[in-house]
Length: 247
Image (cartoon, rainbow, N blue to C red):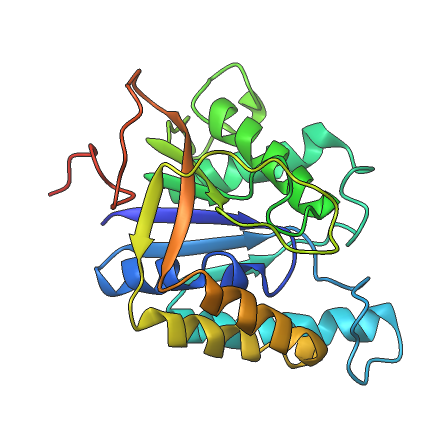
């Protein structure tokens, strides 16, 4: 079975940035796995939560509901501190992601670009850096060699993609997104994407902006092909699995 691993920073990223593509490929028979680095406990919008711990608990439940809508086969949230990913130990986080890659053995990894996505969020930037290093190191037997036991082996992922865009948000820090190389037409999965984001009820105050931003992009999601397992020349794509042999 074809597999996609998506690395995000916060609950709701899976829907807002990648939702249409994840559901589309799920319905094409691809196994989807999302690893979210933080439970989003430092969010500005907190619903009725009275503490960071309570907010984290609520957002984990919202994430699970969103994953069900998007057809995500497995979604997990790690326990790194929201808003502090630039302060955590890089080698540890990358090691966690390397293990997930080696155990899940995806064909594709999706994540943010180092600019931090359309919002320029620092956590998004760090998710990009962690996921990029994990993509590169998961296939090397001289990285995290202590993991290589009980059937765990190095795994080379075929392609790494950063979500990208051809627009900017007003009143946000300037970003320099990677050029769009791959456009996925999500069609009616746009509605699924919006429904999945709406499952994150604590974030209701930003629904109008997110919905407007999503709809303005049209029924498509854009990506930048950042790396491939085999040397190649960049070409426009309309399929994440372009150039990858599939049974």
